[in-house]
Length: 317
Image (cartoon, rainbow, N blue to C red; front, side):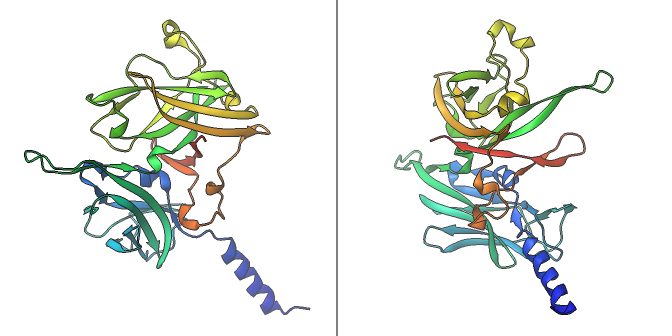
């Protein structure tokens, strides 16, 4: 018979094994401040999930393709805000702006207790070589998770406790960059369609300019409401695409089109099975490599603010 001491040791080990390793909330990470034209990144703070107890021992690094650390910024060891498993912290003496040295692949790596916790990969490409004597400055563009990740978030509406109504839909949250604007224009409007198989089951409105990309903003995130298929003249009263329609078994495609020239900018996909959306493997707690784990939560700042489920989707093959 095992001893009582061995029994309690096994309980402690099991509890330690069940505790997820600290990581960074990816949705907040992608909402950071970036300056692709000048190949610059700003560091100010981060939100940690499964945040370790204070004092916090964390830093953020810029690492090139050869593994050379180009910059490093430690965090203060106390949280500015703590709620449940989440903790927000600031980098010391920030914000800091770091220059990437030019074209190439880079990783922004968040370290916790000396171990890599989360990485944000960025590819930097040259747009203008700066060979004009009157305009010698080089300009760049960034490619990264903004280009291939999005998430669905449940949104309730028609809430009336007296009538017992509480409908819900999904909003499509995605990021746009200045590269999504048609050349020579300051803004471009987007049109989003949702297909189940080959059937169009919903789309955004097409008028009003409410879904526009700003050419001066990089990494702007917007949540797009999807309505049932309708004619332009009926947009004001077109019903939202209810949650049940998103969950019927099948293969789904979400197509993001720039209205001015009908160019497809993104094409996301997901599968629904047994009345639910199949989650990405990278959003499972035990996913490896851990640095590519995506926390399936986003911060909804409506009202008092809360972390809610984010169903991440990625670009379709």
